[in-house]
Structures are given as structure tokens and as C-alpha cells.
Amino acid sequence: MNQIEQFLENLSSREKILIYLTTILLAILLSFHFYHSYLKSFFNHEFFIQSNDMDKIITTNQDLNQQIKQLEKELVFIQDKIKSYENYLNVFNKNHETYIKNLQNLAL
Image (cartoon, rainbow, N blue to C red; front, side, top):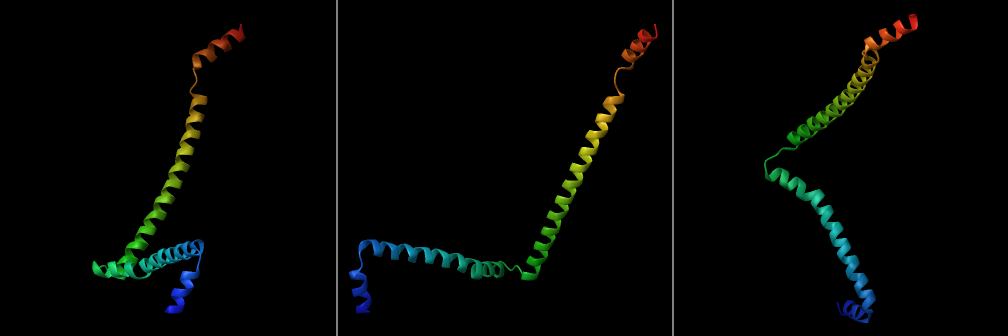
């Protein structure tokens, strides 16, 4: 222990700050690892949620998200079709009276 104390006393302030920062960084990384590995499973068991139920919920959620994406794509496709049909209708839905008058003027 005395050797460690002597080593730390001989370090400059810059080196001490670097050691403190790396220690803090490692502590943060360790806490994230601890959360992902232990606390998630602890809270799942603590609230009486079985892993099978969680897996079923996750898979149904993923399936529903995929269905939503597929339906959104279909909706966009149908909206594009509707726009093209509206354009066709606009072409055929012009004022026919002006066409008839123009044809009569050309016939004279």
C-alpha cells in the first residue's frame, strides 16, 4: 500500500487528473454494462414479468410495426393511383362547350 501511495504522490497534477478522468470513464462504462446485464433482468423478475411473456410482447410489437410499415406503403401507392386518376379525370372533364364553339367556328 505504501508503494501505491508513494507512486501517487510522485505524479504531477496533470497525470493525476488523467487518472481520475479515466477512472470516472471506466466507472460510467461499467455502470452501463451493469444496467444492461443485471438491472433489466432484475426489474423484469421484480415486477413478475416472465421472459416468455416479454418475448411474446416484443415479437407481437415487431410484427405490428412491420404491418404498419407495409400498410403505410400501400397507402402511399393508393394515394399515387388516386392522384393519377384525378389527373385523367381533369383531362376529360374540361369545359366541352368551349370545344363545341371552337369546332363550330372552325366549321364556318
